[in-house]
Image: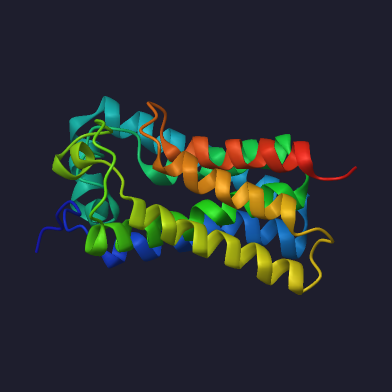
Length: 211
């Protein structure tokens, strides 16, 4: 049976894939070190960018890509760069710009907070930003305050857990970074939030973290 593009608001395959794919690079950095994580990010970015170029230049390659991997795509990604590619590039950029803890936190906020926000917003979202963002009916409705609240809870909880486990000494810079990540994810910015969320959060934490 032909695979189809993900179109359900609560597409669990895509949400879980986002969590897994987005967590690999930051967890590698936090557990095994920055150098290994950068190498992984370089490899992933190179492969994914090459695939994007091939499929967007060739209808045949793109049809094969959508046939087999469409379940992991958003409805508007059939002819656009995918979230997975943005995640890999954001992972590489964050590791090159920030120290390992800031980069790891910023990327994990996105990897875990964004899918939870989408699920909560899709099921319980009532108060939405009405600005146009992306494509499709859900994008026109905008992100919800309920989803953003869920993002904040996940990101703040993650920061609290790592602080409690002794990963870093001060909680408040990580907490502010978590709040910034949630707010940026909510705003209808023209740049994909897989890029804006970790970079904005990372810059704020980098500026606030004691040297």
